[in-house]
Length: 256
Image 1 (spheres, rainbow, N blue to C red):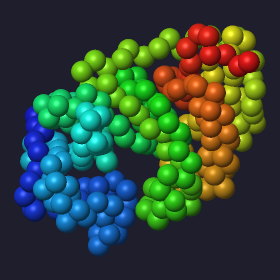
Image 2: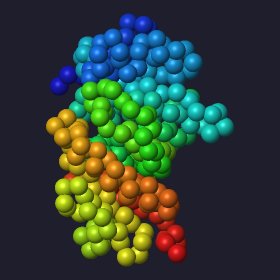
Image 3: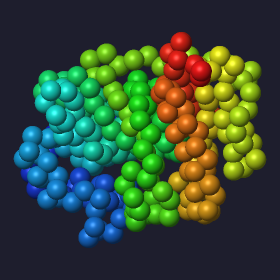
Image 4: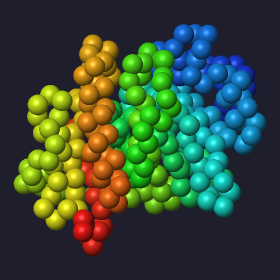
């Protein structure tokens, strides 16, 4: 097995390689990477960190973080991407750096329709989905997001003590309250009004490439579920292997 190493990057040559790596992931033109070298260099100069993971000599993952307001002891992860199986290693390196600098939490956003990323963030890392933002970036023209609306789910990660994923509960016993664009169930809500389950498409990136209109219908359907639930005090606490979010709220906060 090829050994994997992670290190912070400060030099222009290394930062250019990271910029090119992000461009490959998001399928942007070589002249317009999503995070240009000069931006990465400025972030490092301002006290942020660019971590890069190498499988042998090959760049196989990277992430970028900066700090939020000092009083909040929080770091913000601007971007992270890695080859399959290396994401956890990259995020743990970023976590160790942030803890060493005095941060207690880290936040970032991701596309809530990408179920594999939701499972990684909520289950593998132990983050909590704390905010749903509609069209966070506005129109995006990269090769992954083009033609969609850029809704994002904010993850808050307790760095010193990541939470254990919540029990998902018995989704099958809860009434279906919304129907998905494919005609199947989109959302269940339990009778105690403490859990909502919401389904996402199996692979929204592939769906967006072949049927952007269908992907947009999914976007807006999931948005309705999340914005309603988050407005009522729910947070995203889990994601099943078959694409179902679990949203929960504490006992005593049911609907009036």
